[in-house]
Amino acid sequence: MAAVAARELRDGEVVFVGIGLPNLACNLARATHAPNLVLIYESGAVGASPSRLPVSIGDPALVTGSLMVCGMADVFQLFLQNGQINVGFLGGAQVDRYGNINTTVIGRYERPTVRLPGSGGAAEIAVHAQRTLIVAKLNPRAFPERVDFVTSPGQQCGGRGRRELGMPGAGPVKVITDKGVLEADATTGEMVLAALYPGVTADDVQKGVGWPLTRRPRLGAIAPPSATELRLLRDVLDPKGLFLKSKGDGKTE
Amino acid sequence: MRDAVARFVHDGDTVVIEGFTHLICFAAGHEIIRQRRRDLTLARLTPDLIYDQMIAAGCARKLVFSWAGNPGVGSLHAFRRALEGKSAGGGGLEIEEYSHFGMVARFSAGAARLPFWPLRNYMGTDLPTANPRIRSVTCPYTGEVLATVPALNPGVTIVHAQRADAAGNTQMWGLLGVQQEAAFASARVIVVVEELVEEDVIRSDPNRTVIPGMIVSAVVVEPWGAHPSYAQGYYDRDNDFYVAWEGVSRDPDKLARYLEEFVYGVPDRAGYMNKQPHLAARLKAKARLSQGVNYGF
Image (cartoon, rainbow over all chains, first blue to last red; front, side, top):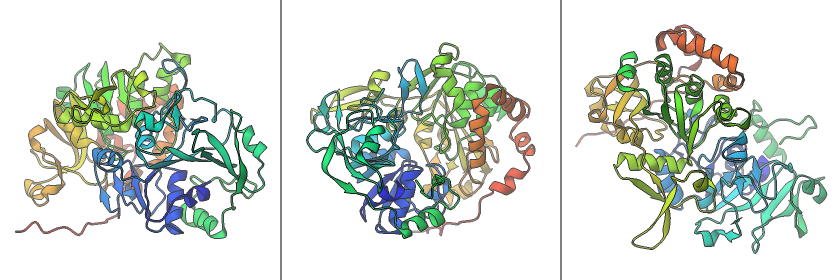
């Protein structure tokens, strides 16, 4: 997933980075095809160049050697709302048919079954980043037809599209999962199956999604991580396996 | 610290202990717990472990926040227990929830002494339904409908920083969070520092001053006062502690024992550090000096 996410980033882009897998993906992209990627963390580090894998979004290693460190009012106003962010990464407990994300509650807001952390910066990243990439593992509970709570808006909310709602960014263009990639349909905004990992069928993906998944007429085949990508991920970027967990079958997430 | 909290933090206050991952003043939170403050409205972007501890200790009536998790680890379980179905009504914690941008904007409005702050946000989200204090305004120039959040003006804001002089002129570097806005928005400001320095040191590098002495009510010198958070250039974040907190906060008995041993069981931060003599060696920062600039003319 980290390698697939990394390939989505173009050299020179400005990326609003989250912790965990997005952070790995961005640093992998920097080490391979996108050396001029600018990493911005909501904590205020701009052009960060972390010498160790940051454990949290406010890790001191994000400050040391970065291009700029600013307060959070500047992060959200001068960078995000200003339109400087090309790509934002988002994830969440639930992702629905239109790429709406829930990181707030499972169940009713007033009396939740599970209380999740909440928005953080996700709501505004979803509104403002020129495009967002959602990274989430497939599971029918994680991909319901409708999320219990819209924390971060996707392509369509309550039947209304992003432009109508006045959102500057294009929203989630892709959902990168552990079995394949969904893409937002240009007309309907629905997340449709676009590409598969090696050895995975469209039915395998459908099993992890809670709505009848539309499939592109011709599905793309995602190349497995190259030897270089694997070496960088395992030996350089996450040598302690903090975020990359081996699944015991020789595959790495 | 004991005197500053006794004098400036009152039952029922809105209390802000800010710091985004960096410079979170755990020492002040612990002192508030020891002095058994009650009915506090606790506000900050990321409640973090410190507010989880204060909620568990019974200090909080209400929580105002934008991301309530254990960064890089998982959940704040005292917070979750206070809200989730199985104990609803039991915890009785009231919440008022925003996004980070919303909280930042609230502090910006508070610091500028404006009643609200406009932002282009929240369209398509359920946040304004969950929190009716997120409203909107029509721009008088363009006609655009913008979201608004109300000013946040705390009774007391507690800021941890690397250094200050005796008058409270405070310098910090590394991640700045919303420390400056939160301080300017507040009626009272307690500054807690790793080091007290002479005014000359402050004057040698004025661009690094984030909070001027004129808005500071008290200066407390408390080395290691941010642990398990960190102070850039002084000590690293104690990530092991954050990971271990998952197990502690998940179990109310373990959490109570933690508070008994490390909060109620010590008189102050020096006592807390004395209990853990290995910490300093494990977390002390390596030197990475800036090149400095010429302020001459």
